[in-house]
Image 1 (tube, helix red, strand yellow):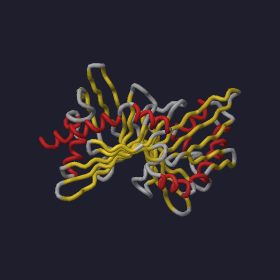
Image 2 (cartoon, rainbow over the protein chains, first blue to last red):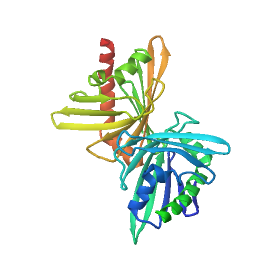
Image 3 (cartoon, rainbow over the protein chains, first blue to last red):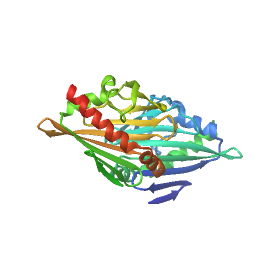
Image 4 (cartoon, each protein chain N blue to C red):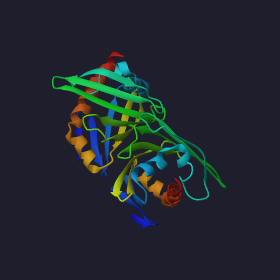
Length: 159
Length: 159
């Protein structure tokens, strides 16, 4: 299933992967900073209506990240670890929603320079099973990603 | 491609995964120990003819592992990180051969109790691309896994 909505292209690839592509009207380094610094991540990650009440992001080999999101329905906790030191060229990290522990995916991100102060983010997430991959799509992931990138546009404009 | 040789079944699954299944004539806890303690790992991991001259394995969330193998042709270095604290039920770790940096896979392992002091290991490795997956198979992985498990049989018999 391939979805393009609100400038985000999300694609199921093979049986284990999801790819997400999005362009930004800002240069690579700035986008990377907004995606890496905890105080900036807190301002955009996830859909509208969620407060990111805890964000840590130690983006180095063996470093961990944590995210606690809160909305009217309660709290969602996420965590992961970094493989390698994160750079705009390659960030590798694991991803787990603690509401479904043990179903962990592995994510690769590259931010491409488009020139003229613009950039394109490429994310690939791979899952241990096709069921985990399908479950992630069914969980409302698209919604969270699309709205999160819209919020990120606002953060980038203010940086 | 599915291969069963020397009691190891190795299977390409979908386009991003490799699964490896192997039974052991030893109980779950003992096999887990031999796969987790650095001084035991050093005695079996990899094909015959390789010396494991450096093994670290901090099998906890955010912990790292390293492996340096040496044979007549030179040295091979590997590294990865753990997601979650490793248990016999679920060990999750990344895998990178530093000869091809950035091509990182993500591995899940479960050791199943077969009763009568026997166990079965299930490994799934997922790769960012089908090319990475195929490259791993082409690199002689099967050979290393099959011989490594034979060496592990000997270590288990001596424990």
